[in-house]
Length: 62
Image (cartoon, rainbow, N blue to C red):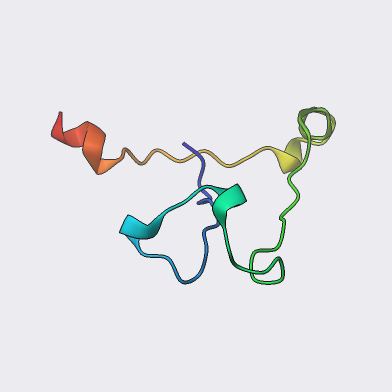
């Protein structure tokens, strides 16, 4: 699992989730965040995503 969390609409609750193409918020409220490509990550190890050791609660309950 990655350490960062995905960006969601600022005014959403858990039950109001939707896909990005259904988002009614203007683009200024949900700016695009560019991520490095795999080639850039391999050429520059500092760009590799940080992995976490945290296990989601859903998996712990099973």
